Image (tube, rainbow, N blue to C red; front, side, top):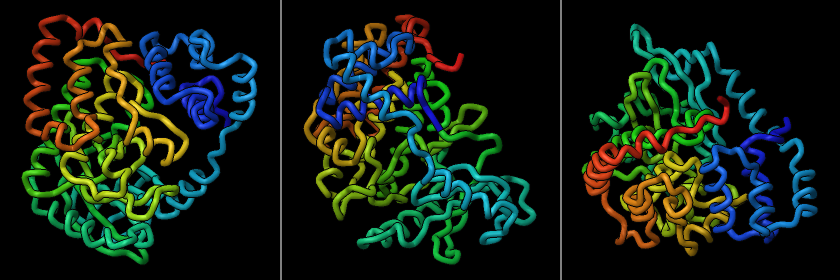
Length: 366
């Protein structure tokens, strides 16, 4: 399947140029921010050429190498996931597939005599290696007794064949945040801040219970039709394919200390929240790359580009908050409660300034 001419194609092009040493990570982020600022009216290759960073003839070669990016592996996983539709797994009738990831498949289903839908998460036992599975089980089981407005309720934890099973309450017609981001690259500023505040409140409740999420990312965030925001699957993480032993998490959201092989803590969750906030506000992640190795070095070494320096309509207070959460040192990051209070303050300033109207959402499909 070709992705030529799409935003995904531009991201792939940028990653390939970065991997080949044609541009730096900071240049790629700046180019993507410029794209987002112009509402994607400029393609990435146009930005790179106008900046004088990559010659036209070199970009032509890169474009040819990106024709028909392979999706076969994901297609195979999706086909296997479909096999359980209509089957009963740990008392849950699987109705449809919600998400498919390398180490996780999620179904929407029903429990007997229960009118409310549930989400059934299947995690292969083989994906939990090197001792982390004990921490995983303790965290997930602790979440069974944790009730908070921005955390998804865990109903049951069980085993099925060669997989662990987590059954959570699922809101009707809910979507995952990663799905929203794919459709609407950049959210309206007021909406982005609202979602970010609710996520920070959810992390605050999780951290108060001495629990750590360990793999916060848009695919772990559920949005209800009424606008509610809930964090799901705390404690569920795995090792990236090309990461060193002892490294757990997802590459784009992995804090510098995680990239160094340390187990994440509450401040690592704040870093991941900062990455999410950066993308919600700008439509761009602070770092890009083709592999975990590419991204790990950036998380450890590269300074984040404050988005308000390139996107002039973005208030400086918002950019400062994001870069604060993305501090390299865990000690320099705020805790979740501080993030909530800061967002409340920033949001009130944004509303008074009128920036919420100036900095609108951008949907490339409209």
